Image (cartoon, rainbow, N blue to C red; front, top):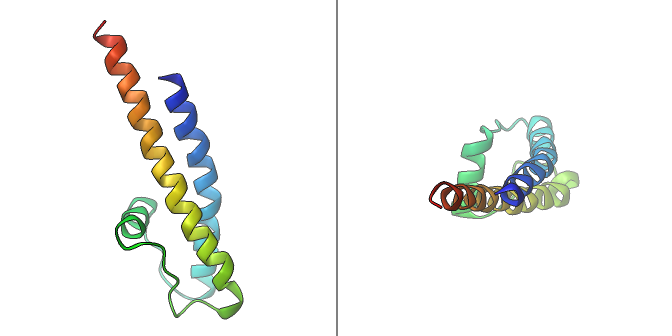
Length: 93
């Protein structure tokens, strides 16, 4: 249970830096950034793709940040699942 919470919190902190990069590039490109959950849902369903509106100088960093955000978000979900599984096992002993 503890390892799942540590995993979720650690990856959430790392995902926050990726989200900050995504938001900074979106602000520079005048693209509205969705909230963190909607952005993760869109990226998880459709895959990380760089919009044509993103500045050419920022495209590589933006693509890496999108990929890292998806990986970290998936890890957070797995960490929460591990924590809830541990809690379920502990309660039902």
